[in-house]
Amino acid sequence: MKRFPAGIMCTCVVPWDERGEFVESLFVDQVRGMLKLTPYLYIFGTAGEGHAVSDRQFEQITRVFHDTMRSRGAEAMVGLISLSLPTMIERIDFCRTLGVRRFQISLPSWGELTDAEVGVFFREVCGRFRDCQFLHYNLMRTKRLITPEQYAELAAEYPNDRVAYTSGKADFILRVMKKAENL
Image (cartoon, rainbow, N blue to C red):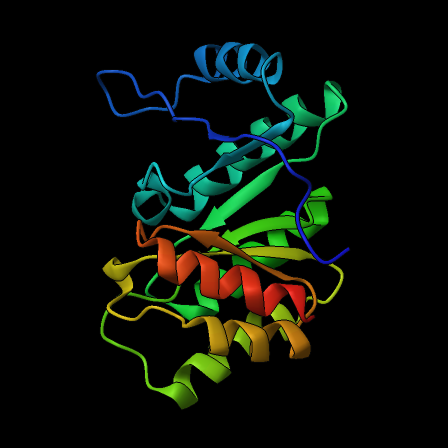
């Protein structure tokens, strides 16, 4: 499959109580309600809290999300936002033990990555976990946008990588779409 199925994707926002603890019941109700609208739900992506949770919180919330999605016949997507590539890899490994195979990724944002570093990032994420699907969230917060030409090269190397567009520039989106037609 060249592309992710067409549909509306929605993020599930993680609720916290006044002590900073995860409110599981409210979260489960939210996920169940959103599943009535679309099966394409994700956590820790564009809502942004994925980079700010501890490993314990990440595992707890991901487990509840995955279980809730599966109980309704849907596949979970988990966002991986981190300054640390080893942390991202460890979190993918954890998710895979649960059965999660869909991920939203973005480049580490500590500084603009060089072409060589971008290559290492995609090799270590998409290349290492070829049984998973990755949706790359292309945003300027990472200080580096992947160009349509680079996406074409990455798609040829890693067919399990997809693209999410955050640029509002129509010419950029059209260039990516034209490159995708040739894959």
